[in-house]
Image (cartoon, rainbow, N blue to C red; front, side, top):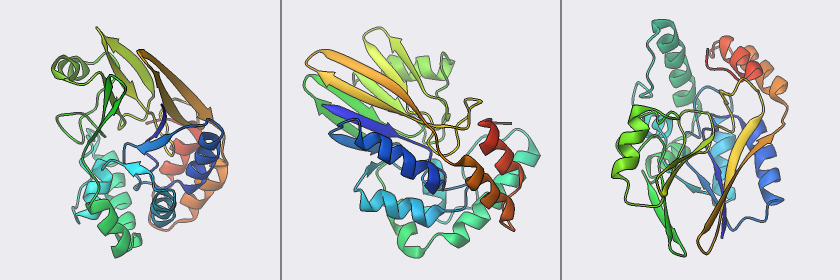
Length: 239
């Protein structure tokens, strides 16, 4: 079985469209999204609608939870007050822009999913098995703690916006990266595939080009979203 995993689209319809085109060429059996369909970008409804149209199995991200449940914060860690202020503007725009119909969809997303493929089990979450907004950065203390307690063979997460594959004994921790707001110092979208054949697990990370300049300009033309978001899109950076 071959599974494509996408994550952290953040209202970037242009990146999502190109990634889904790329996924179709990979002969996958299933597409899973580990959340954060909305936030930061200009097209929350278009992203949600495309996810729905393609019947993509989607896990709730912290942004999805916030918008779907009418919360005033997204649950991200912002040590810099300026970043927190920008996130607040993102929340305000996204909450006003997203339709009630799509908020209901976000509100009813599952917090995690476990899939069994052959003799392997895969657990899909957004942040971690403990918290929807916990960052499992590569080689972090948090990742080691979570993997020590993991009962499944493979844990797949998102939230950090940086794809990676890390082995913990016989278990695997896989981060799906980000379609719409990568933090790889590269503006291109990224996603992963997991292929399981009997006892063999093969994981690949893919990079997809899209018209990020169009998306960045759309952000700049928006009257609410900070222009700095456009810079982050162009640079593929977190700061």
